[in-house]
Length: 434
Image 1 (cartoon, rainbow, N blue to C red):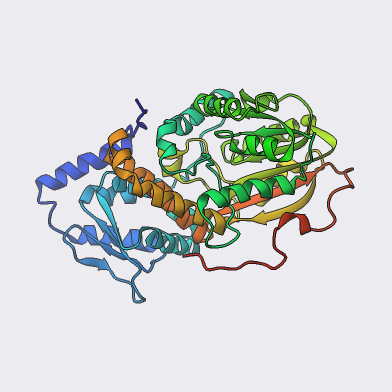
Image 2 (image 1 turned 90 degrees about the vertical axis):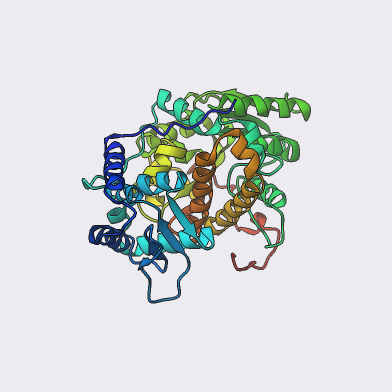
């Protein structure tokens, strides 16, 4: 039976429920001046987005002068207070509970709100009633194991409903607007392989391997040997079965262990989608792991969700979806490369590719929403809709980035002299993200 995420209440949440209950007994269906003032405070903290804001009587308390992109409706007084006391957690939990409704195109509404918040001040919006800024939970060895289990061990049957056929849970690479998600994920894996210049016989270490797709792809199509590390028991078991079915057991080894315990020497060090779970406090530890693993003429790639500047994590994502997660800025990522003078070869931002990837995932999620609701419940469905749609909006609004950083040992002088090997076309491809 799939595990249900825990939504235990803190003191602030309990206080909100008590206030809501008291309001209900005193005619909470009516709107008073305080309700309108509180919603006005939310609008100001969000930077007055081009999105109408409505209370439970149906009238717009805030209606932007510019074209309205959608509407957010607070269905009860408790939802309003929750969003004031702890904006991210309160809003996310009340949307998940059906007490806040988003009208209009879901991703467009969130994208416009995120853009407005970024212009006004992200930190200002994130502060709770006491002025506290959210912090990611620490990724100690025990903490990392707990955090990975919370998200990735929800069940392979769940993820299979909306990921591509290879179960790739990272940003795809859309060379044209017409390619399928499956084709785009293959293109992403080939891009990673080209960036670290894989050749037959090379040894690869992969830190954080998901369900094993990239490791198997590297071994099958590039003739390399891979040792892939991952903390998720369900993912590792699934990956081992795939390796056995493909006849690649002798060339790919899936190891259920923490990245801090990586051993062996490699010609290429690859990490796709793991750095978000490491945390800045552990970047120097990761640097030491890379230093002891990477051969003298080795190259590496780190692929990570990131930010344009250091930004506190989303309190709701941290609490309900991805505990311990922290998307770094490029400046913060440099503490991985600087201690051992690793040379940065290439930096690419694929944020629009991740926006499209997430919209593809969200569509598949919605296509299977009845099955997912049977596996979990309505609250879970809305929470994951907010997660997938909110992340798509974050990348589309540029409040979130996706970095691929290629690096090498400082003495490695046989790296490619041009970028010609990275792309299958010579002319840049441009197309509008819907």
